[in-house]
Length: 122
Image 1 (cartoon, rainbow, N blue to C red):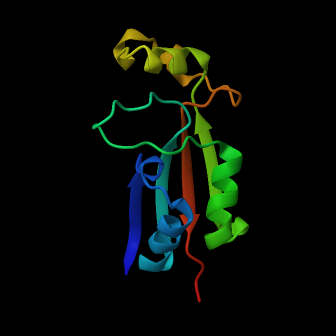
Image 2: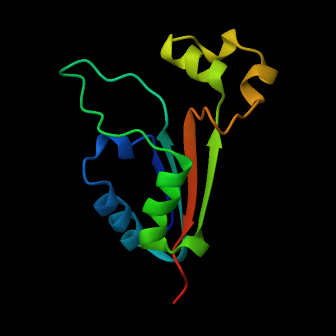
Image 3: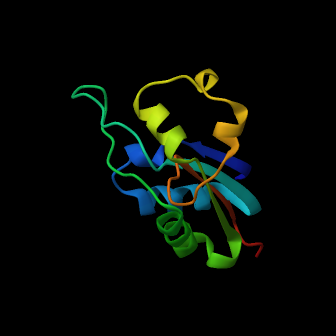
């Protein structure tokens, strides 16, 4: 049983996402925290590079994690903007954009979605 579990940029590679979230919940101690990030935008890998099944939104993450953790125990934030998404798709490095360009968040164009989910205390 863990106090914290980091699930970073992995769920899009797992076909059965609800089961993965349930297993993450199971290994947490009561009061334990799951910190997860998922892509909202990304390229499809070349054949043989692995599979990528999903892209996520704030709404889909809220619903997916709330089904296991309870809505009162889930916080979802989205980060990105159209410029950051475009730069990511073109393979640009973050150093090629200014801090101001990267710090601007546009909820209509998330690049990544972050989730904080807490296993309820018994």
